[in-house]
Amino acid sequence: MKGSVLGMLALVAGLLAGASGQRSFAGKKVVQDDASADAAHQTGARMEAESSRAAGPKEVRGKHDLAALLRWRQRQDSGDPELQREMERMSDVELRDLMAEFAGQLKEAGDDRIAMNRAIEMAAKELYRREGEDGIRWAFALGEGRRVVLFNMISAAAFDDPGMALPWLDGYEKEFGKGMVSTIANEAVRGATSRGAEALLKLRQLYGERLRGASFPGGRFPEDFDFKLFAKGMKGDYRSHAAMQYWAAKDKDAAWASIRESAAEGVDNPHDMGVLFSGVALMEGDRKAAEWIIPKLDEIPEDKRMQAVRGLRGQGQLTPEGARVLLPLLRNDEERVALVATCVFPMSNSGLEMLKCLPDEGSRANALLEVARSYSFQSVNVPPLQREKITGFFQSAMEELKLPEEARSQITQKYEEGN
Image (cartoon, rainbow, N blue to C red; front, top):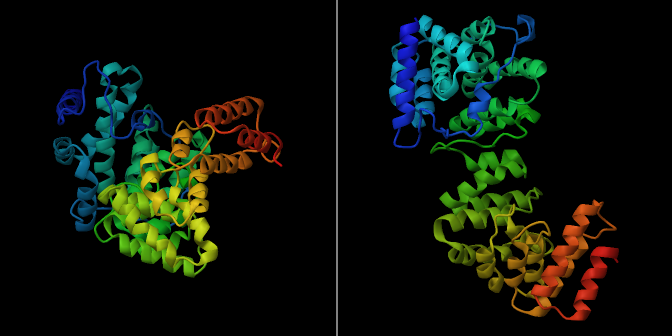
C-alpha cells in the first residue's frame, strides 16, 4: 500500500498547489477554506464503549443509493473534484489504509501535513458515504492515528445525519473536552442548512448548547429554503439574523411581512429593522435601503416605534455611511439621537464617527449623554482599566466635538456618578 499512499500524497499536494491559484504547497503556508480545519484535523476523540451509542440499527448507505449520491454531490460542490474522483476509484480497503497510514504519520509530516489532512478528510467522506455508521465503528477500533480519522468520520456523519452522529459526538466531548465540538457542530449546521429550514430547526432542538460557537445557519441556502418557517421557528433568537439578512437581500417585502406578522403575535426582536436594512443595502445600496425601510416605521405601533428606531443599528452592522442616509429620514431629533446613541461604544473606534453623523452640537451632546448613562460607573461593574478607557473615550469625544463646558459637565457627571 505504501506506494499508492505516496502517490496519493503527491496528487493531493499537486491539487493543493494548483487549485485556481488559491493554495500553495511545499514549504509555503496553505490557507484552507475553514481557518480551523488544520487544527481540527489534528484532533480527535476516543469514543465510549459501544453501549454509549444510541440503540437500534442504522441504515448503511450504499454506493448506488441515489439520495446519498445527491447529498454527496451537493457537499462536494466547493471541494476538489479531481481528488474526489480519485477517492471514488479507491476500494474500501484502500481508503482505510490511506487514512490509517496518513494519520499515523501526521506528527512527523512537516510540510506534508496539509496534504495528508486533506486526503484523510476526503477519504473519510467517501468511506462514510459508502458505509455510514460502520465506518465510524471501524475508526473507533483503530490504533495509532485513530483520533484524526475518527474526527473526520464523525464530521462526515454530522453533516449527513446529525441524529446518528450525536452519541458519537457526546462520547468525543466526554473524553476530550469541548475543544472541537463546535467544529463538528458546524458540519451538522452546514448539512442541515442544505436540507432546508425544517432540518435546521430540528437540529437546533436536537443539539441545543452544542451549537454554541457554531455558525447558524451555515453554508449555502438551497433555492427552496423556507425563510418564513425558519424565522417563525427561531422566535426572535439572534441566530436567525444571518438568514433574515439574506432573505431581505433576496425578497425584502416577504421578509418585512414576516417580521410584521411576528410582531403582531408578540414576538419581539429589536434588531430586526437593522438586519432588514443591511440586507437590502447589500443589494441596492444604503440610500435606497433607507428610503424603503423608514416608511415601514409608520406601520409599527407607536409604543414600539422607538425600539424599532434603535433596532436600525442591527447587531452592529450599521456604519457611519448608513447612518448618514438614515438620520435625515427619521421623524425628529429625538429619534436621531436615540439611533446614534445605540451605535456608540466607548471601546469601539467608530463611536466618534457615528456622533459626527448628527447635524448639530446639541444633538451630539444629547447622544453622548445617553451613552454616558448606559456606561455609568455606578450602575455597571466596570473594572479599573476599563474605567480609564471609558473616561478617555468621553474626554476625547467631547474635545473632538467641541462641546460647551455645561454639556461636558453633565456628561462627565453621568458616567462617573450615574445621576
